[in-house]
Structures are given as C-alpha cells and as structure tokens.
Image 1 (cartoon, rainbow, N blue to C red):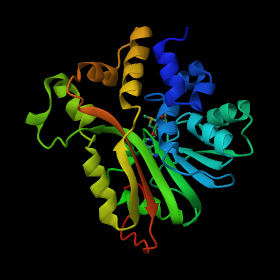
Image 2 (tube, helix red, strand yellow):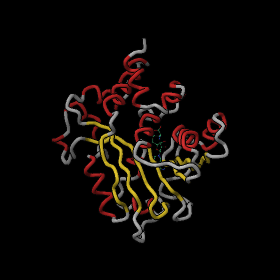
Image 3 (cartoon, helix red, strand yellow):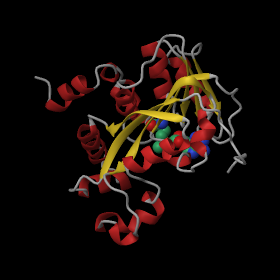
Length: 262
Ligand SMILES: C[S@@+](CC[C@H](N)C(=O)[O-])C[C@H]1O[C@@H](n2cnc3c(N)ncnc32)[C@H](O)[C@@H]1O
C-alpha cells in the first residue's frame, strides 16, 4: 500500500510526481522546486510555443519542467549558477532546443522589451523583487497581456517591528528573515505600479504538505537548516508559501532612473 505522503504527492502534484524525486531534491535550492512551480502552473495558462523567462532558475529544473510539460521555450536566468552546469542538466533531459541557460543578474537583463509571454520566479523573487522599482523594470519584458507569476515564502502578517518577531526566529531575523513579507504587502507592491492586474494572490493550496515535506527531508538527511528549523517551531502558521500572478496592462512603462545594479 502507498504511504499517505506518496498518495498526497500524486494527488497534489500529478505532473511533478512523474519526475525522479532524488533528481528534484538534489537540484532544488529551497523547498522542492517542482512542488512550488506546479502550484503556479495551476493558475497560469501555458501554451505550446510561448516564450517564458524563468528568473532565479537555480539549477534549471523548473525551466526543464515547463519545456517538457507545456512545450514552451524557456530562457533560464540565474546570477550565481553556472550556465554550463545548467546546460549539462538541460541536455541530459533532452531540452537543449527549448531551454536556454543564462548567467545574468535579474537587474541587468539584455532582453528586448515585450519579448516574453510569461515570466516565472520560483522561490527567488524575494532576493531582487522587494525593490519597488524592480517590478516595473521586469514587467517591461512582458508583452502587453503577458503574465508574471511568483511563488515564495510569506508571513501570515507583516512584521514591522523587531518586538513582533516570535522568539523562535529572533536570533536569525535580521540576517535571514527581514525581507520576508506578508501576501498583502506583495499585492500592494505590484498593484501600486499600475502596470499589473493581479489575477491570483493566495497561499498555495499545498502549503502544509510542502512545509511538512521540507522539514521531513532535512530530518531524514540529519541536516540542519534555518528554514526547516523555523517551520518546525512555527506552531501559529506564520511562515507560508504564496503564489501571485498578474497580467501586464497596456500602461506604458516609464523606468525613471532605474539603472544597472540598483
Ligand atoms: C532559493 S534559490 C531558488 C532557485 C530555484 N528557483 C529553486 O527553487 O531551486 C534563489 C535563486 O535566486 C538566484 N538569485 C539571487 N539573486 C539574483 C539576481 N540578482 N539575479 C538572478 N538570480 C538571482 C540565486 O542564485 C538562486 O539560484
């Protein structure tokens, strides 16, 4: 008989449960990258032939998945992961004609405006996207009517003052957590630009399952991890995984003085 975790895995993630779980885990840089991505694909329509940017793609597993499952072309961008190593993974999965690895800073992209149908960012947007000027900047690469979708960690409420930080994350907060925000904070950030119409902003339906699997993986590997430790102690459900999808409006994007590296 299948374990409950295995059958939940298949029910929650019919597509990614077909992939080798060791391969996914070895090549995920946060939570299981395909769990996060598949929850996003439930709320974005991918059509064969679309041009997709996978921003902060890490080891390109998400880009490979999108190309294989939906027949899209993916530009897999990451500032710190070698494009050569990603290309090896891409070739091993027979995606070398549809996934293009690039080692680039999200804030210095060379693409033409209006080039992409979809931009996704899995567990990465938090690293560069909290800057208020970044969302207009990245939106310029979307066609009018194109979609941007992110999956990331959020808090159930905004933490404004250090005194609001729960004891279990106090030591780490100012190094590892201060840039985590509430879903409402993210929604306002995107809405304020006027460039994006929010289509979905919610906790992923598989939130509890993903968090529990993450804790379990580190326990099984007898490794310690700040996020897994915090998740285990988070009895009030402060830490969650959210997804947000928006459509680019027709508003002309003025980038003002947004410039390289800022
Ligand atoms: C937590 S990892 C997630 C990677 C992958 N999406 C996954 O889920 O396995 C965050 C990724 O963002 C990338 N990153 C951080 N800052 C970046 C930037 N300014 N431009 C491009 N990538 C960046 C890191 O190199 C890292 O691979």
